[in-house]
Length: 162
Length: 110
Image (cartoon, rainbow over all chains, first blue to last red; front, side, top):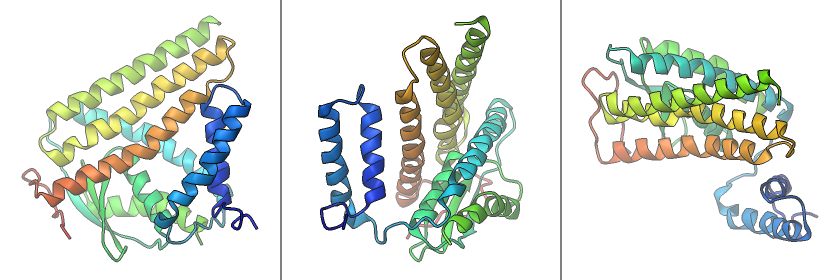
C-alpha cells in the first residue's frame, strides 16, 4: 500500500522525515510540509541505487554494534596518535580481506566501519564483492588484522543480515 | 552550570583540539599518500566527536534544550568521512600513486 502512494522505502522516508524535523528549528507547518516532500522525493530519486531494499532481520543488535564501534574508535585513536607522535616509521600494508557478508548494504557498513576505526582504511571492493582491499597504517601481521575485523565487526553484521 | 560540568566541557574541548592537531600533524609527518589518508580522516574523528559532545553538554545545560543539531552533524560526519576516504584511496590507486618503501602487499587496479 505504501509503495503505491509513492513511498518505495517507508523506513528511509520515516528516517528522512524525522531528520528534517530535528534539523529545522522546531516543528512547524512549513517543516512538516517540506519534510514530507523530502521524504517522498529522495527515496524516489535514489531508488536506482538500491539494488534490493535492505532487510534488517535483527535491527535491535545495531545499538550494541554502534557502541562497540564507538569504543574502538576511541581506543584506536589513541594508538594512531601515539604512532604519529613517535619517531619510528609506520609499517603500512595492503591487505586483501575475504568477505563473508553478501548483502551490499552490509558490505558497505563493514567498509565504513573499517574506515572509521583509526589505523585502517577500506580502499576498494572487488567487482565480484568477495574481497575488500584494506590499507592498514601500522600492521605487524596481516592475519591478525583480518581476524580482529572478522571477530569484532563482521560476525555481528552477519547476525544482523542473516 | 555547575563547576564539574565546566571542567568536563573544558576537558572535552582540550581533548578534541589535541586530536585535531595530531591529525593535522599526521598529514604533514607521515611518509606517503596512503598513510597520510589516515591522519585527517581518523584522528580527527575523535577530535570532532569530543568537540561536538562538549557543545551538546554546554547547550543542554544552558537551558536551551538538548542540542540535537550537533549530534546530527556528528552523524553526518561519520557517514561521509569513510566515503571520502574510500574515494581518495580509489583515485590514488587509479592514477598509480606508489606506496612508500616497505609497504607489504600491492594496491590493485581494476
